[in-house]
Length: 160
Image (cartoon, rainbow, N blue to C red; front, side):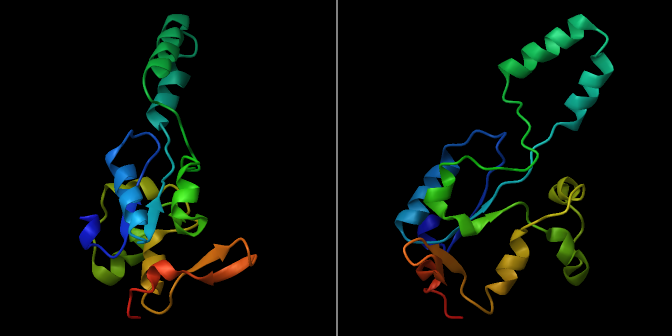
């Protein structure tokens, strides 16, 4: 599907192990196509509630500690992606959510699971407003040699 796309949106919560998505990102970048990377916060409110409920029970606390050590439960409340994605994608294309709720009334969308996950926080850099702006301008990228933002050539295939 990367071959037929103009760009790729990669949804990569840090609590899910994936080899397919990184492979698609690499193929996309080899083809000089933009990658828009969504890395949402990862929290475990029920685990925190269970820990609070069990705090006076040393056996339960030990079992919780063992469970956390044995499974991939690691909170990432800021949604910070793995560092190796930054040089691969470029720092300008990371988003902390989709922002569907900002468009629900306009398009009569019903709230979905992602909306409920995003409702508990303010998005700093949602994806959908970025996509809406693509209609009017080509995104910029940082040029470390010039020390300034320049037009991103990866988007030049678009006829804006």
